Image (spheres, rainbow, N blue to C red):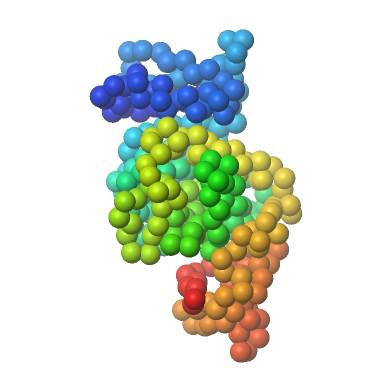
Length: 277
């Protein structure tokens, strides 16, 4: 089920078509729009006219306070995986409650679902989501990003995005990306040098969400650790955290960052880790 919330004016039907064309191509489905409702709820149909059983419910919004909250509530109501996509957030948050800043063209997407993994392995999910974002970005734009443990997406000029994972009975994973930003905030950067327009937002988010679910279906023991290590912006560099410093040397099978310090190797599983470059 695809839901598009108002306001969609001016030009609601032009915008609807612009938003859903990438999903038609990606899902191999036709999008049908019933009229007369301020909240547009539409079904995805295959070429034969049958309702398509999609892997998750999708909500496309122009703006929302928080895609994380919206996705969690949608999943709780339906019991199905839910993907919420917005171009902007008015009360978005990053890791440790940090404020979200909207780029000139950004993507905010949150995927809420119940992983078929033992709960003790859910700490791997932000790393899996980072790999999925890296793949989706490469497929969409042919741009290569690096992954800074545990949740940042980097290009040489700075941070272009991040991953946020929150758990309750289900898990909600957010992916925020700076697609284009004429004057980025300090330490930030954008993936593209010019505005790609709004239609890329939902296709990029759908590609990311589908890849996350594909990787989760493989099981926690098959998470793409080698791919994460190859893409790491952290391994091989000096790092520091609240009460220590050292050189990051590896990623453990459980997702821990392994750091060589003067007192021996330590394993970090949470907290802020800063690169010293």
